[in-house]
Length: 160
Image (cartoon, rainbow, N blue to C red; front, side, top):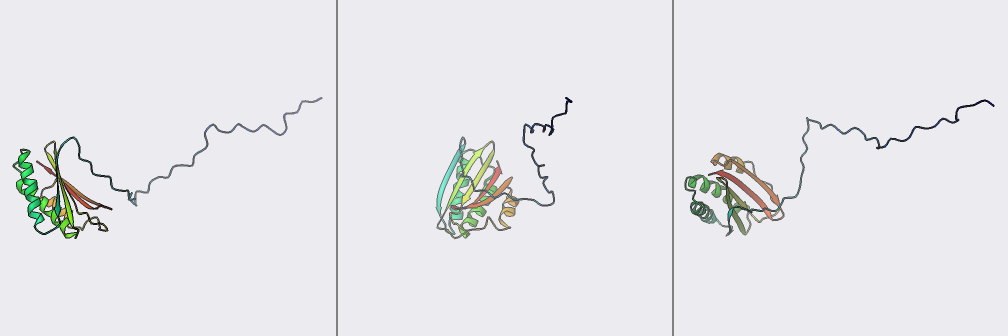
């Protein structure tokens, strides 16, 4: 009897890993913006001070005094004008948001101060186009803004 090869022919074994389609290459012409929830602010392992203030026109002067006095307590005396002006602009913006109160936070670390203001009013845009350039023009080394359910948060970092 003649020997015939196996009929039908044997199929090759399946690949050990499934074949993956090629990964998409990012289109450099269009940018994507990732929207995510705001993280809770956590100031730790550094000196910090916090003030809850009424949202009123005189709050600007009160907040400015709090920040400058606290920086003096920590030994920083050279940045009175810059710190006061930045604080005033941030607080004025939060007061203009129309809430009932504002929160002011101050922290220092490695010869820098962080000033954060929270307006406690929901439903606001992140910020208008004049606030952050104004903060930068006053001498902040960096600044930013974001919004969440607890209101708009504005912040600035100053070199001390």
